[in-house]
Length: 210
Image (tube, rainbow, N blue to C red):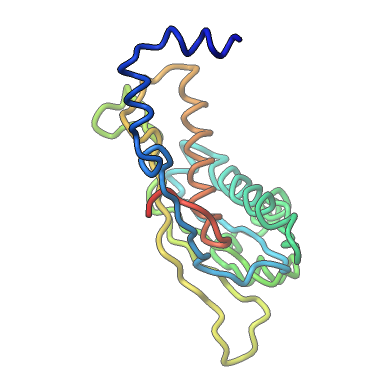
């Protein structure tokens, strides 16, 4: 009875329009995308992030935070599948880097330290949280080169795989005002979007489009 009363008050034109709308338009098409690198399932993996010293000066925990978001996303998507992927705790990687600074640009040193199969290595090429043209507004942008290093590769075999550069921007539409509330929200949302952009390189996923 409630449903009949609700429908009765809708404008006739709106009802007619809905009835005539093709189902194909109402349901946005999607497509499956194969992983760019499909060798992580069943393997032990470490995530290593390098950032410019200037970035660490302004945001001291950026390297660790990005590695954590990416590692968490990989674990969420691949850790529960069979065969399961194991991701080294980013806190352990960061602790090792702090004690051995040269390792921050040496994926094989990190790989051997933690006895992993692969190291996902990112070099941050661009990192910003404020809009460069209007610094009183927030718009996160991250761009990074992404490579995978096979720590257990035999001599003469391919050890490094260079993937497509990862980029993200948040928010998409327009920057938001810089406030004490917005700043951490935009930062976290940018990290999450970037982590998903990187992690999707390693598992099949769905995107909008035909």
